[in-house]
Amino acid sequence: MRMRMLVLAALCLAVTVTAEGGSDDVSQLIDRALTAHGGAERLAQPRAYSVVVEMTSKSKRSPVGASSKATHYFQPPNLYRLEEDTVRGGRPSKYIEVYAGTRGWSKRDAVLQVMAPKTVAQPPDVEQGFGYKFVTVLRDHNYTASALGTSRVGSTTAFGVKVARPVGRGGGSEERRLFFDQETNLLVKSELHAHMTTGGELYSEQTWADWKMIDGIAVPHRVTQAIRDAGSTTHERVFTNFKFADKLDPKLFERP
Image 1: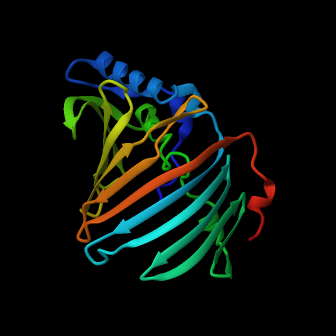
Image 2: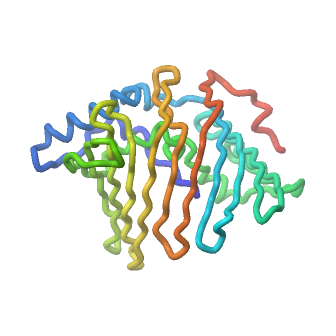
């Protein structure tokens, strides 16, 4: 599942804040969290990077699950390559996906397809959705933020921040709750509560662990997502070989 691109420029705009203890309290919590993750200015900078992601997905229908290993390459603003090896039901498969400006291709097991312009216009959210920029939602001016107080996340004492926004014109809404280690100020858990304009609801939660500082930015290396649906789906992602780069090899973004 991929989240779509959010407006990262919102980092530079003021966020609407409310809290039981006053707006200054939640502003200070947001500052603490962003500083621990590298600082708002550094997080906002467009950075090229590559990372290897090993993912295991399970559900009630597929308790054995599926596993994959993928390498992601991202060169802002719109160059992206995915190389993925998947095993599902004991059958291996290889998949490549490339976005290069106004062009895009996918290739599964040597079968090449040219992406439709509509698909190319909506590339994967590889920055915010990946993880190290996830916390930038705290400064997104589309959301209203409030403090949640302290709570326990496993054995960790955490402070929480809720950000919420309306979605669509039919009364839909989206609420995200982020919980940060009281001592390190790093993200340990996030929750998504969404009410669809069609009347449906979506709930998922993610745990964030194994943070490593890379070039002054905190990067998570183990993220587990549980989706509360009929299938009770879970995805666990382990990140390795994360590297920032000034510029990636242009050949990576050519037709595969």
